[in-house]
Image (tube, rainbow, N blue to C red; front, top):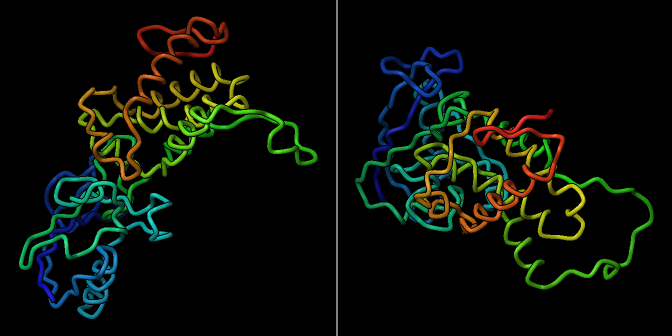
Amino acid sequence: MADYKIKVWRQSPLGIGPGGGEGPGGKEGKFETYTINNIDSDLSFLEMLDILNQQLLQENNIPIAFDHDCREGICGACSLVINGVPHGPESSTTTCQLYMRHFEHNSTIIVEPFRAKAFPVIQDLVVDRSAFDRIMQAGGYISVHTGAATDANTVLIAKQSADDAFTAATCIGCGACVAACKNASAMLFVAAKTSQLGLLPQGQPEKTNRTLKMVQQMQLEGFGNCSNHYECEAACPKNIPASYIAQLNKDFLISSFTNKEFECQNDNCYES
């Protein structure tokens, strides 16, 4: 059993926080510190927050708002910055897979939301990541004629291409790459989502349009440029390599020259 001080960012959904300071998106908010005792080392970080919320409710205080869903590390909802690191100090780990044994007894744990212009804070630790959804809606799909199921081996795919596409497809869209980048760039996310389709034969017909539309939407959402510091790769809980960004840059360059529907100026592309 261990005791902790939890320093949590509190922010009202109406922008009227507990007081003091400018929060993300220009809303008011500040850090509040709580003490929590007798925490089992085998509890997950989110279970600890559940216990803290029960304590706050018993004290007639407003519980902390935070996102979660599967709690199995596959949905990306549990996106928190813990002690300055997206998803916490353990590599290849989502917040819901982080356990309290990774924190020292009587230590202070700082918990805050992802800080990015494109991820406005909704309340406390909850941010609006619908910008990722709009990027996917812009081109993260393939258009096919539905009908009877085809044989699995109708379209042959090289093993290396299949492996690379599968690695890209493991991206859970949590946004840790954005939170880790000093420019709040979404390049690793977009690179993974374009590559998971563009590396396969089924994704080739719409490859140029997909690349340009998703990059264009990324720019419209207000994400920054790649900083080339590879912090996105280090923070990614699914270990998606930054080499996919190089593939995205290559595809973008080719697409901007070959697709006549788009006009590109100063790294920005627009439908003509």
